Amino acid sequence: MLLLTLFLEFCKIGALSFGGGYAVLPLIEETAVLRYGWISYESLADLITISEITPGPIAVNAASFTGYTVGGFAGAVCATLGCIFPSCLIMAALAVLYTKFRQSTGFDTVMSSIRPAVCALIFSAFLTVALLTFFGISSFSEIGSTRVNAPALLLFAGSFALCLTRKVPPMVVILLSGVLGVFLL
Image 1 (cartoon, rainbow, N blue to C red):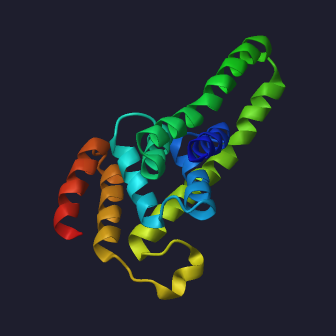
Image 2: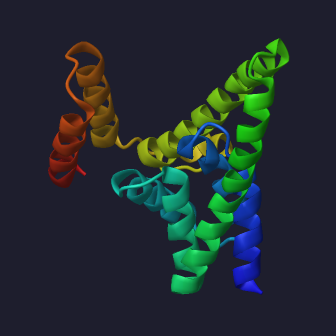
């Protein structure tokens, strides 16, 4: 029953994951942390980190990590297949529709109207990670019991500044942040 639940829940997540991996993280949080309690907020932070540093799409890596945590290898397979199955169906259908309607202005309107929702989902994922990493809380309702993780906040600000002002390649910033994180965090 657990494997079927993993497959079906990640099918829902996969079907709603417009905008890539970061947009799917709030959906995984809602399902895996809040609804089923499969993982904790600390595990969610680990999931995001592991999903970002391992090769492949973040959403698929996150599904695999969650599935493995809950149901071992079989759980990872079910969650991963559930995550990619809707995308395969949707892409096949969109390929047919695109060739038929690509000149339509309505198609452009639909695609451009999805962008704000995708931005909101990505920002929600950023807030979840930032609150947990910088303040040790999982929601704004816990704001009174905060502790500031100053080294993590400074490391983030420095990394952001390097990428923005010095045009340092992201891979260099990631490696540098990892080395500094070992000593500071």
